[in-house]
Image 1 (tube, helix red, strand yellow):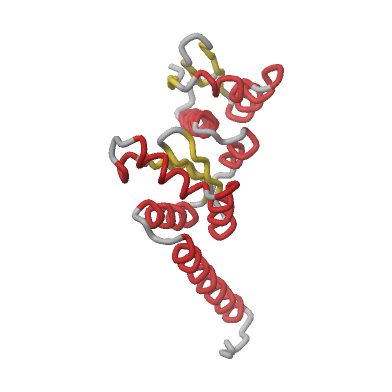
Image 2 (cartoon, helix red, strand yellow):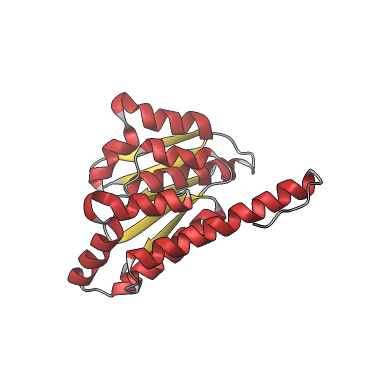
Length: 196
């Protein structure tokens, strides 16, 4: 018995999933040992494992996550960061914060993106994650810690906190993480920790 999953995506993202001459689709198929069928008319993407090994479900789920990331606006290159076992995809529905108002959604999306994408880029730099804002969703690719931190930053911006407040929060977390890392390194090398 082979495993399969079907996903309906926006038609305008089908080209990104297939890639030039099928290159993206083929890379996902080869790396995850699956087959992908795309129905361009309806936007249905079917992923099917090639073998019947129970472990194939893991490869199928990884492929599904990558296709989902591309469908949420990530470039295939960024979505391929999900091949790294440490990384996963998190999707936040902004309607949870703003309700059904399209004006509120536009306002929050504008705040998250920032002028010429500055806010999104700054959050990515401070957290080490990748962010895509597409439709009513924010998608995040990163390690569990990166996703937690990015989600917190997004929640703060959605609830009206200033960008400066959010950036300061992220910088403080990063500073503490560096100190913690330095302590661990010094302890493992038997060097006494020096405070300034």
